[in-house]
Image 1 (spheres, rainbow, N blue to C red):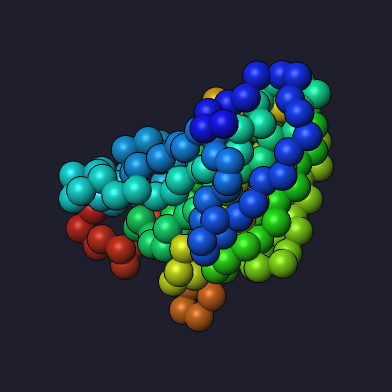
Image 2 (image 1 turned 135 degrees about the horizontal axis):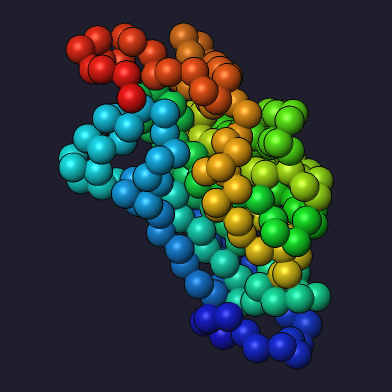
Length: 204
Ligand SMILES: O=P(O)(O)OC[C@H]1O[C@](O)(CO)[C@@H](O)[C@@H]1O
């Protein structure tokens, strides 16, 4: 199997590839470049410049062949590359499940964080190899690489959960993760980009 399988599935084993970067057998592979993250970084000028300067790959999602359909339990490995845009750490788009169901992440490599927002409360979970992050039903979720190496994690989620990206654009994520002096700095979602990033840049 090299793409999404068709139910009914037979029992199967799925193994990690080299560096925990892939799954075998493997399904779909999604590549998100900077241009796919329009409107998500608070510093829109820095985002646009990064697109012009080569439109780097921000993260990839490698799925197993288990399909996103009701009653199945798909898995995927997400690799977020290290970097920041206008001081804001590279991250996934973030989404809400239209069908509110839980999800688990297992940290595999690197240093990351799991930002959760239910529309009122925001929570931050530190993630690393061996950490399980639990996403309860009704919490939008975004992963962030806060280190200097690729941050990699396994996600396991109900196949009927779905991905609502519009919810995050409409409601935000409560907090943003910025590069601080020694570690991650969490700031209110609406806080402007730091003036020191570009002193001559007018605020959007
Ligand atoms: O869908 P987004 O927000 O781009 O983030 C990708 C992550 O979310 C998932 O789609 C599942 O929640 C994972 O496969 C992956 O870790």
